[in-house]
Structure formats: structure tokens, C-alpha cells
Amino acid sequence: ITPVKNDKKNIEKTIRSLSNQTYKKYEHIIVDGNSTDGTLEILKKYKKKIKLISRKDKNLWDALNAGIKISKGDIIGVLNSKDIFYPNALKTINKYFNNHSIDFLFGAVKKKKINYKFEPKKIFYRFNIYPSHSCSFFIKSSAQRKLGNYNIKYEYCADYDMFYKMIVKKKMKGISTKKIDVIGKFDLNGISSKLPFYKHYFYEMKIRLDNGQNLFYLIILYIVKILNKLRNKLLQTRSNLAHKEINLFK
Image 1: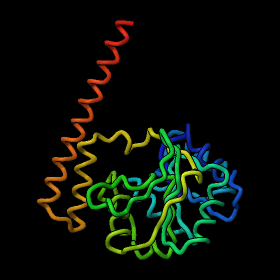
Image 2 (image 1 turned 180 degrees about the vertical axis):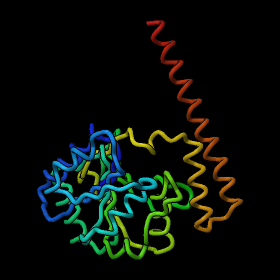
Image 3 (image 1 turned 60 degrees about the vertical axis):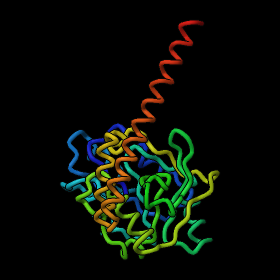
Image 4 (image 1 turned 180 degrees about the horizontal axis):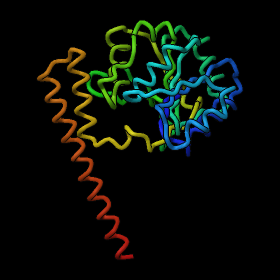
């Protein structure tokens, strides 16, 4: 499922990454949020290769829910516009589901480096326990139905809420691919990548609270996260200044 709105510069490379797959038994559902920049005209060119929905939606998660509703495959994956699959991605995903008794799978993806680790035991204090949502996450449609829809009230981080329910509440079984099984490339210029860290942490804490984590624990966790982020920024600033000083004396 690919949600998109006003991204005519990138949507074609995302579509082509699917049409170039060595594994051909898939449907590509694209949910367009009433684009006005020419994206819809591009999508219509591929109407024989894609299943297109064009509608006004509330946010990314609302678009994904619309795609999930009409999906017919045994496995559901998410691929945002800008992101791409490598040619053997779906073949690799199919192999893992066939060879393992699992409900969901995270594939290794290329960001600044290759991200591939899945660490579910750490979900109680951090959410960056998986490679990514788009381009990486695949789930059996039967498991998705048990989880229900993405909660659209979490504008930026509804995947965190979904994964908390999936891992902690429903205790579903999942793994990640090996590092060598890289399935795609994640674009670092998406909406979530531009979200200020303090706002990101706020949404994270709200999701945790709504899922029953202790309020006092969350207040401490929020403070620790903020202080740690500020510490890292300070260390990076000092490192940059030291590097400039070294260059001055060369």
C-alpha cells in the first residue's frame, strides 16, 4: 500500500520499484489524497499496474486504512512515496514468511546505513526497535485484522501505537531479515524525519500512556529522553567546533 499526496517528483520511482520485482504475485494499492500537483495524472498512466483510490483523507494513517480495507493479499506491506523496493524484495519477503511461523516481518533497509535489527524487548522504553515502517514492515492480513486500523488521531506516530499493540498486547510473533537481505531504500526526507524531537517524544509518551504505561514512569522517561538529546547535541556542537579549530591550524 502506497499513500501519496502531491509528490509527482517521486511517485514514479516508487511504482517502478514494484513493477520491476522478480516476484510478480502482488497488488499495488495507491491511495492518493486528492493531489493537485499532477501526481494523479501520473498515477492514471499506470492504471493497468496499480489499484488506485483518490479521495480526501485526514492523514497518512487514514490513507493506509483505506488501502488495508480493499487489500486482497495474504500479506500487507507499506511503501510510502519516495521509498523504493530493490528487485528481489518481495521474493525475499515471501521466502521468510514461507520458512518461518510468524505474524509479521521487518526487512533490512538502507537509510544512512543498513538498518536491520528488531529488538522487541526494548519497546517499553524506546520505539526505534525496528528498521522502519515504510519499506520494511510486512504483516499477515489475518494478523492485521486482529489488530484493526491505524489510529488516525496520532498524526505522526500511529505506527508506534500499532506496534505496541502488536508486540505487547497481542503478543504476535515477528522477526527481521538478516542484514544481507536488504529489501529497499528509505528516503530520509519524509514528514516524520522533519518532526522536532520534543514533539516526537510528546507523541511517543501519549501513545504509551494511552496503552496503559505508568504516568510517573513516563514523566521520568520523557525527561531522560530530552536531557539525553540535549547532551548529544552539545557533544556534537563541541565536536564541530574542535574540528574547525584543527582546520584553522593546518
